[in-house]
Length: 209
Length: 193
Image 1 (cartoon, rainbow over the protein chains, first blue to last red):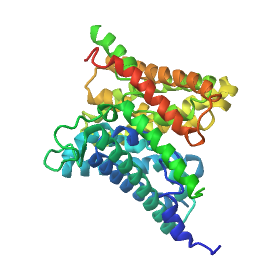
Image 2 (image 1 turned 90 degrees about the vertical axis):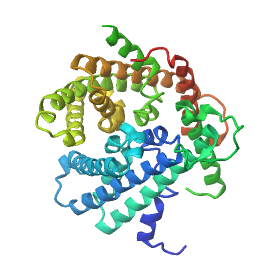
Image 3 (image 1 turned 180 degrees about the horizontal axis):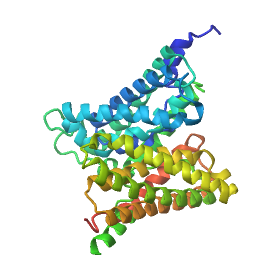
Image 4 (image 1 turned 180 degrees about the vertical axis):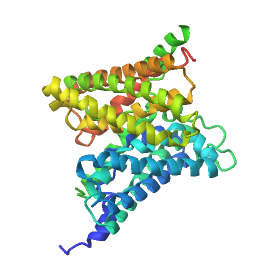
């Protein structure tokens, strides 16, 4: 086997092999909470990715200055700062999305994925690698959100790109009665559970471990 | 009084924090494998959540709002929660080492339990009074405990059940949670604030 480029590996491992949602099972609250529509899921993914990249960068830059005993509070303050920035930006430029995501925007601060990457990766590795790791994991997280949201929106609402009626595309015409359960909280759990089973099948089939 | 009672009922059953609002999913999936750890985790969460809401509400109302610092809300709240968790950890290590061992990694993870942060944020957002906020926090944490304990009970039996390989572990847990959530859907619309 040829030696893999570590930089490329940092970037790609978060997308499939160590996907934060499907494999590591972290940061599940927004995954279930905002995925009734693709737009919301995608927006959440981007917001979390932005915070993740920024926090990975800063944590990695400061890794030699943060005393190990108080590292967790330090990481949390760094993350909270970026979440505050993202919250302000969303409020100013994307008020509709901000309303739709509701309390899940400030809750990015307690997203275990971000703290997990800071603790497990960025606090030990050089800046460029941490940056790539942040980008990779962020893409993986967004991807998972969008996949789940696509399933839930198509089945639960019969649309894609809703809820805004101007952009919404009705896939099955006007007479279609969507399966409202999938737009409900219980549908989110069931859809994600089934998706995980599908992911397991795919991983097994292609021997990804 | 009526409002307090409805808050209690709503946040334990109707708007259950885990099953209807998706707060605190990580510990819900993580420590629901055994009944004993589930109960321990629940008690820790009840305590941290109530204390955190009390402190954050006071800080928000008497310091952040008068000095126009509400943009510091996220940073302040998370620091309060983090220090409270530290406190619980120290106390628990002294009082009950077995429980401390059992909770293991999940105790520091209460810091990143969205449910705790969500209660603090929602109490302020919904403009509850101090008493209402505390009752809200207790009810929400009891709702969390209820979901966690039910789930632990189911999962202990699930261990022995036969199922396809690919469903094992997280997948079947999530589907079970979905069915549980479906049951709680029956309360929907019973009371509103």
